[in-house]
Length: 330
Image (cartoon, rainbow, N blue to C red; front, side, top):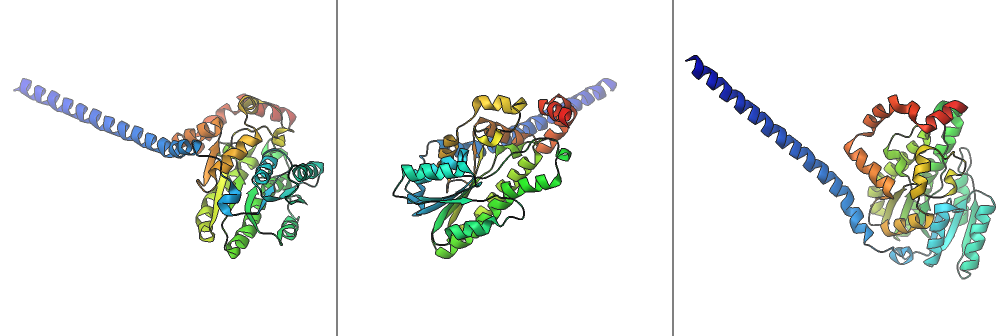
């Protein structure tokens, strides 16, 4: 009788073990399937876009005028040049310096039959830059808007004055929002189609210590674009934010070449690469990641939440080259 009872207990334990293994296998399979679905949902559109040609925005939107901020150098200048090459007149907005004047002069020389307007302004708190932009565009139908201006400031958060952080936020996020509000109303009232584009960054996917204001300003810009795209559809305006990986521009001229920046510089894209990707994406997707770093960090944070990454990085922070550099100089 005891032997029969022991056999029955062993049989039941085996059943429980087998059931546990079965449930575990099912849960593991579901997790793997969910991850695959997430990755395919992200990668699928990118694969399709890689086969689609760069669009002519003049023809797509029946446009005659475009506006580009941060148009003096880098990505902004490449965007302005591409609009001009497609036959648009362009308003170039940038800091009031010789770089902006040269960009305008070069385009006038290359495309003498088109018009190029120069608006030298600073996107700083307390500066009425929108009045200057409005005055320069009131008499022309701007329907292609590309907000590209922005800058990067590295270092410990507490080592900079709070006004410096607010100024960066004004340039990188608040100014594009003001510009989008102004031109969305104008395009909507005209009854024409148009597009509003933003140069964001892939940096906001991950924790960005020592560049937190840059990261949070780009997070704000991307999330603004995602939501604006839904509302702007009523105005027949497409909204797209491009999130490039490291690009060789003067954005990094005053930053030390340490750690991740030194590594990414080996695989950096050109401003023209980024411009081509944006022109291929407008009206087709709302957000476009560009470059391997952007793709890898986006997929990584689809699997591991950025808050968890912050918990992992925190105890390791003293090993980061940027930490050592800025702690030494603080």
